[in-house]
Image (cartoon, rainbow over the protein chains, first blue to last red):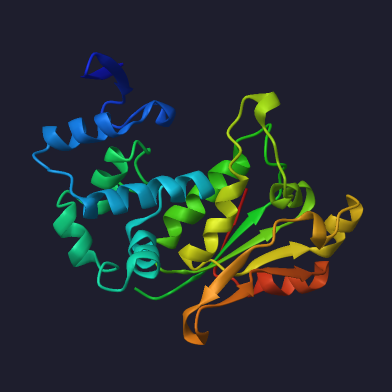
Length: 111
Length: 134
């Protein structure tokens, strides 16, 4: 099992870099994962990351991109609930990349 | 691609076998393909929708909260067989209250669960293009 080291703390990850245990998640590991992919986390990124964590807490799944887009539009405003906005924040794909930083498993059905 | 009517028929209790969880995962994956999706719960399958599930004692993930996300996936036809509930001493009140939001009706919350009797369910099944049984 691979692991990421941040500030002396070790986080177990799977072969694609997703946290093995979402309870291990904290902001430090999110920042470290983002830095490793040359992504600087802004408040706008955090809005999505926090949204995903809340969604997982309630429904026990990482939502599909289509569902995420719609739900973000409803919660954070129509200007943010579109794939252009989300892909600008997370160019590797809002599902894959944002879920990874949020400590969630890869979305169900995401290849 | 022409839209087909997909029915996921759930017949088993939520834990003890992997059928229930696998079915739910297939439903979520399948929903991405924008087909006309329905779910039906018969026999011990009705236990999957019982509210207040706690799985701490059996060391399995409680996936029942995920049923509440089905509305977000535009899966809003969830049939529950009346006889199966009655045979197990259950009523609709024992099940999760599943809803979906109708975008065309100012996001009004509407019930997803449809209580049907055995012969009504037979007609629903007869109307499907594809039935996947779990």
